[in-house]
Length: 148
Image 1 (cartoon, rainbow, N blue to C red):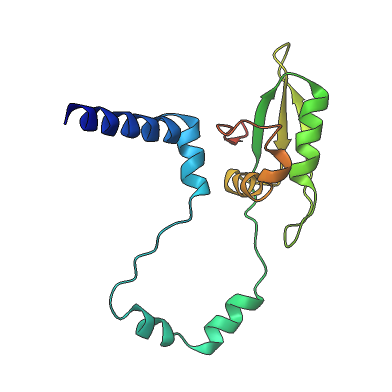
Image 2: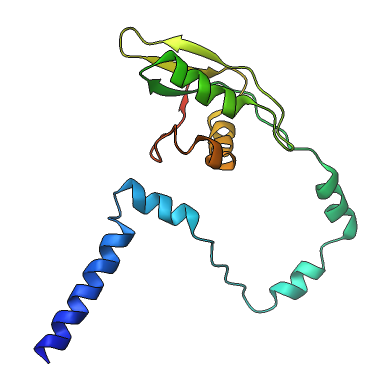
């Protein structure tokens, strides 16, 4: 019995270690990579069928509207590194239009990438949608900030 309990503890420890701690960036990344489980209450399909076809057609035709704002991402130690990340995030892809960017020196500490026409939510969305292009250049814990 002791051997069985010991094996169970080892298996649980390995599973916890592979998932990461709740405060760890790998835990947050794993939560983003998992598909969301949806729970549909009884009758949800019937209520969904009640949505008028005009609303569905209007939603399908509308273009994404990006709210105006200013956001920045950083701090990057080298200008070339910051430029490469900025080019990949600012380029047009799919429904997203290209956006302007500039590098803001932060003294001897490095550079910020400033997107003057994109708010924090828009920049975060681009970081998620282009994760495959910027994953080797950005930390999973990188968070956009509002311009000051």
